[in-house]
Amino acid sequence: MKLSRLRGRKICAMVLKKGIVWKGKTMVMRYVWGAPWHPAANPLVPAVYVGTMASAKLDKSAVRRNRMRRRCREALRTELQKYDTFPAHQLLIAPRSGSLTAPFADIQTDIRNFLTFLHGSSTKKK
Image (cartoon, rainbow, N blue to C red; front, side, top):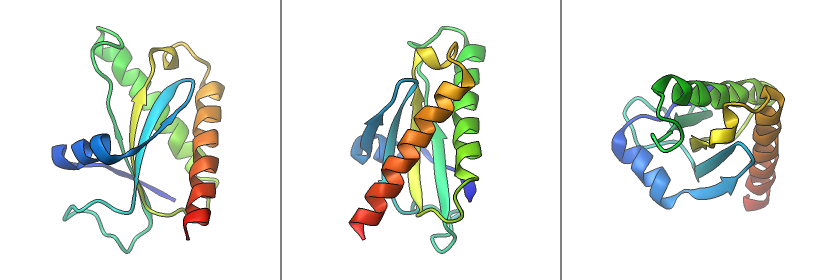
């Protein structure tokens, strides 16, 4: 399963405004079904489009905020490799401050719970 970048300020703002919220222990996920309306995004290729956001309220250090983003994105990438096919989604990940000190296994568990929730709701929708 391919993990692509969620690009553009307007697209991220749309996911932030209209996205469905899922809250976990280490992060908050907002998601919208389908591929984004962007010239670089091919709607025929199944991919998960991911963006991250972490405000300075989480931590004053940009290094720590970037580490939180990377850990969440890496956990998502490793968990998505277990799926052969996955419907196209736009995800916006907002890590919580606990994701910096939490074990990586906890972040992976959060992602696994989100993906099973998302996969279950996508089969119910169709």
